Length: 261
Ligand code: BTN
Image (cartoon, rainbow, N blue to C red; front, side, top):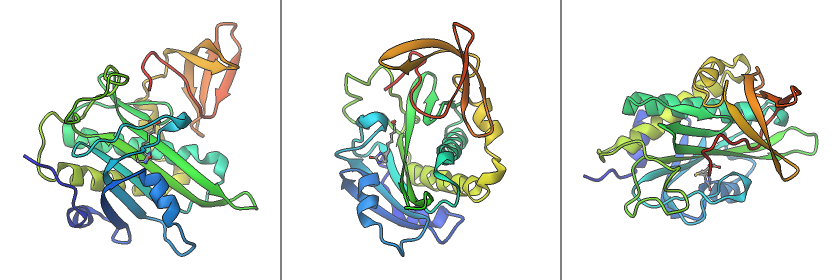
């Protein structure tokens, strides 16, 4: 059974008919491709989706393993009106959008590791990388929402470096499953994004959190500090309490709970 990406199948399933979709067999990175394509008249909702990436990018300059026939690598152009310090809301809304789409199509429970990773049974199945360009007045010129999803196990399995932490959502290939998942993610995302200020995704974001109530490690000045994750506030900041009882709101960046890549 094959599951081929198809622009037509994706478009048919999208609620918002203004979304423009380009499907590529391969590119270096869909985020980089989209960045190169940006012109002032390119509208919000322009999406690049690839079957594989040769230089898939993760956060903190990591690579995102992106082999053919198994994943979804997609970048969506946004023209956000919110201020860039609230950009984390875009990533959080996307995380909930992906989580719900995966749960609907797989029946499996997903968890979100603050702020941008999605897990099924302790294995990372999706990573999100939001990048932005800021105008001289401090507002967003554009943002690129990059989403990488491990739909199926890669043909040659995950490489050794990530095989213990990366997982796939589906065990069997099914025709159009990736196209349906892509459309579902985009539909969910724009439902939240179009009402971002009302933060309708926030309850789900908290409820699906993999870190709330857990002991975590927070890196600072090349050291790791133990802390307890207490709360996610309305701006998606994570309130942590260190062993010396000091508390801090973390805005984004890395935390670790023993699973990471
Ligand atoms: C992470 O796990 O740190 C984020 C991974 C983000 C990967 C996606 S795949 C589509 C888009 N293009 C990229 O090069 N990266 C993002």
